Image (cartoon, rainbow, N blue to C red; front, side, top):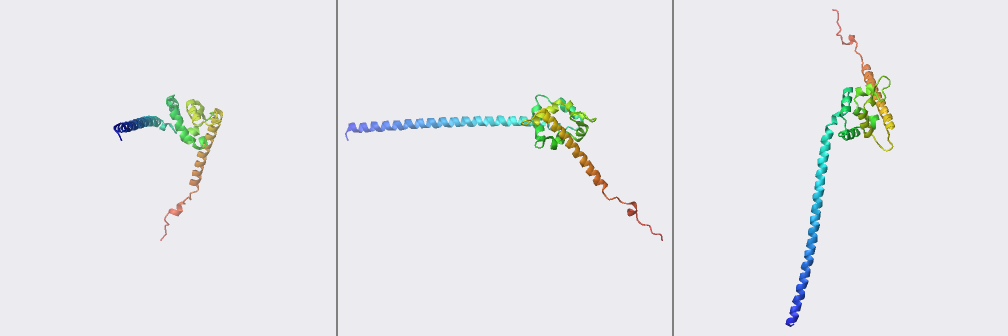
Length: 201
């Protein structure tokens, strides 16, 4: 092999090496770009996760302020609850009421929203010498929103609430009747059964 052939061979090998190096650089550049993109995506996801976590904690803290709103046990509590509900906290009140009422709605769970005294003293329309729960529109709106479902409207809501009052009162009276019956069926003790007999000597 003469000198020219050797030079040509070396030139070809050098060119091939340069091509390989160029391809390697391109491959590394692409890999680096992919790695950088993945790192950015991970950072973005982590930021989103932290934001959601903070939002969740914030909502939980806000919701805790209203955990004591239910059950509403008296007329004073009704008036305080009506006064306290506003545009800022209404969403939390609705979420809390929904959690307490579902599933079963008012028929099974009204006592989680209203205490026994309120259930006995009030009804929806204020009939039969009862107080009128509709005099508290903010509370009713919260309960309406909490029970909203497909095909739901305010008339259905009021009918469901009436049924809830009826069922809760019946449950209360049945329980009281059962307690009185249980008490009255306890065996009575006659005084002569407990007195120590006195024998004349």
